[in-house]
Image: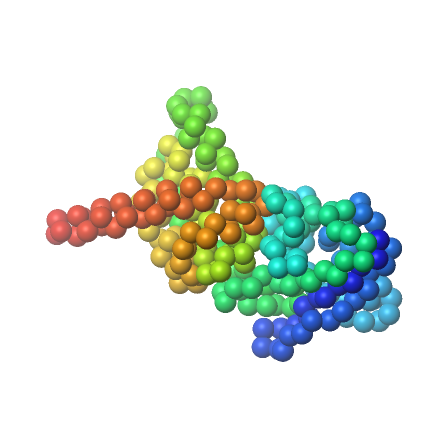
Length: 253
């Protein structure tokens, strides 16, 4: 198939950006979207022109490195799919495809389609781990965990941190990412000792960078792992409990 690409080009955060048009002839419908960009870049390099910069790593929908807006949709038109898993059979011969980076105030553009997603790292650093000493590791079957809790925790742990939820949200809210990272710890016994300390620290760090959730639901639709917004409700409940606990503790002194 022959395609036309409108690609956002920007040399850096402070540089002025613009769309540039590229022809993409002889694209196989079996190519992934990133393989199609590779093909375009090979032609640009052969013409001694600057290739398009974009993030990628595993190309298996696991690492969360890739991610662009494709015709205004995070990761493109196919639901539950990362950019690297999107195949060109989703498009038609002669299509014009607009490719942009994630658009969020907290994500500075590094170059072209590459953005700085380090604010997500700050949220994890605030509490996205278990540090309570537990002694020697017990046998796995010694800790009873309800199957429903284990399933919900594993569903939340599927988050790959690509930030599609933030890019798709009209408010650039980080609630789905943060709640998924909280839920996969807070739903299991090992996460209980630091549960309320964790939710308070991570939510308040999130609020330093991202907007507020107003229940549009775009985050769940854009998520390549289809993570449920039910996790946001769980996070909000735990955050309120955490603040109440702190007020009670403050009143004891």
